[in-house]
Image 1: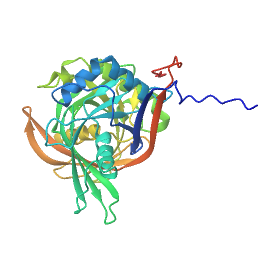
Image 2 (image 1 turned 90 degrees about the horizontal axis):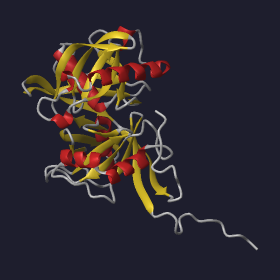
Image 3 (image 1 turned 90 degrees about the vertical axis):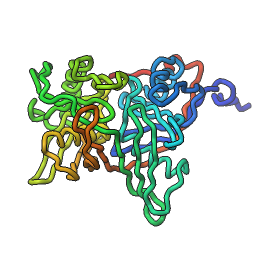
Image 4 (image 1 turned 180 degrees about the vertical axis):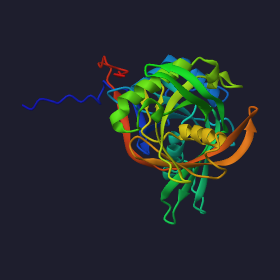
Length: 349
């Protein structure tokens, strides 16, 4: 007599989460459109505060981000209602340590997802603006399609970005270093890798994480990390460790962005690239309209430029445009077995 095999789908599993996963220049982005918890708040910034303080939402974030369903460098977003009818939708960005204020690689992925999955109808011209409300403001993923209707790339048009401080001295395990601090939707410290004897290569991965964490936590609650008008945007989100590879008048850099608590962006980092555009413009390295070719630690590339220069928060700033592409990697149904005592999961860094 045949024994019946156990079917966990029968009665034991009643908690499921569906995702569509993309990667942008190597960095993952897990898109969740349906949550069993209503994200309360009058706008996306308020919804972020709610999510950060709601244990139900926090549990779902951990389930989707932590091992065994994710990993320490996973990234994703919960789709929300927009602030008003001027945007197509809103999003709350998340990572292993919480909810971020901005995410450029995620914005590129979301625009492409919205076109490829019919959330937004592609314009016959081949250029479609997908307007998204994020915690740092309203941004655009400008998606380009070819004559066959296939997506070729997208341009992330960010909120105004500007330098908060230059040549800030920071004490680290490698000695005193000097960084610039810039807002690009999130606040970034920026360190020249050569100043600490490093190159931005996979071999230096652990050392880059170490110095990135040192700088972030040294500055996170300092005066340099205070947003001038919205305290919800304060704090150093990440450290950009960059290497200059420019040739002649061509501005070429490679970076590893260490964000949250030790996560490393596999892409050149969209909001981090925005911060670099603002910083390089402020320092006179990047001329108006000049392109920054911005590489990542895994060899992928964004291109970026300042679309506009303007005064914002009493400072000279720019509207950055960052160009890249994203590809779907899978669709997933994540299930929770109530017998699993490792729920919501774990991380080892």
